[in-house]
Amino acid sequence: MKPMSYHVAIHFFNQEWVTISTLGRRSEIKVCVNDNHILVQNSGSNILSINEQHWNAVMERIAQLPPEERERTSRYIQGTQPHNWEKCPNRIFSPYIPAVVRYINEGKKE
Image (cartoon, rainbow, N blue to C red; front, top):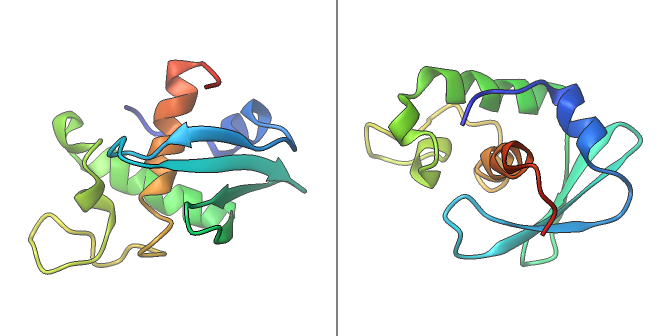
């Protein structure tokens, strides 16, 4: 998985919700685009609008990680382990962004 532009993601999705797997593939989230914002809905029906600043922070994190660690959810959350990301912009929704990137890289809609 490699970092990608926010605009690539904006153009990949539309206003219809698409269901994708989370990074750990244990749950599902829904993704759509509205007014040039990526909306992510988790299994608890909470929705967050991902702006370009949040997206870019996660892309920087992806770029910092070795390739073999980029798909590990724990790399995108706060915690006490050295591999956790203390400066994550959102402790719940930040791990969903790499799942969106993976989904776009796979180039399919489930």
